[in-house]
Image (cartoon, rainbow, N blue to C red; front, side, top):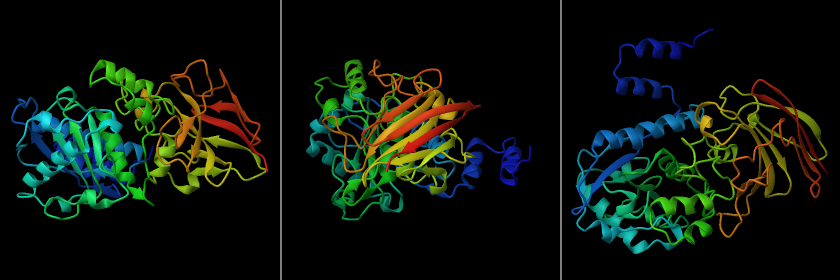
Length: 398
């Protein structure tokens, strides 16, 4: 096997460099290295139970590894932690934010942002960083939430004045706020919102869980709230952390779906096979997790705003945490900006409707191998599997 010069250099370096230096060497080959600022915040009434090493590992290093894999090496994170913890002037209750998005007291959230940035701006120019992450020395039970976005998020996205600091300077990208108990799924979920940004007054990368269904719960953060949140994952289940951002029903978090990666610009156009009107063809579909794959997604357009998107999920990398292996078929609808009241920008076609959790939604040769949409004259049929590659017959009516 030939080893590329850069990979060979890393192999040698791994025996001589410190972990931090090795990570820096790995990022040297990354086309886009992001530089977030992680602001460490504590409260006067909550004893701090974490240190900066924990924050670096969980909020910078782990998301960096995940995003490098999801972006096929296109995007990396090399951020900075504030050199000290900033103590806010009020108790944690003054900033309490429930996990249900539609029930958030935006006044309390604005106060949290204002008090944090007011303290930090005396020491650091936050506008020099690609985005901001605030890590609170409080649990989700104490603060009310595992994590959220202020922009693009609960403080808006149609008006970027939410990016202004108290002194009037404009931050880049956006801001996410986390409880210390936020896991990797929650961290990358919110970072992905920031990376997607805003276009034409809409978030490029919205949530995948149903916001209305989640917010209907009256539970506070804890086991009952986690169960309610899982019940809101009616569109994409546990197949994408934009849906299961805590992903507590899985041993870990899955990779991003093709829909998410396309929205973030991480799949090149030549790796998406688009089916033309009247076309009937066979396509070899590589695993979505494969950076060397020739075809990573199949798009079957229906109208100007709707299409079927087909991907191959195999237990490779983060997708070893996906519910199963097989072919996912998604219905994308670009006319829907956010997932509410049972409507969503993307949702899975369930190959096994008897399982409403969507854990068995994948099509496979050993189970449901054909999908037909008679209205739009679309047919998807799994022909055979060669290793981890599927050969799929796809047809589109005129």
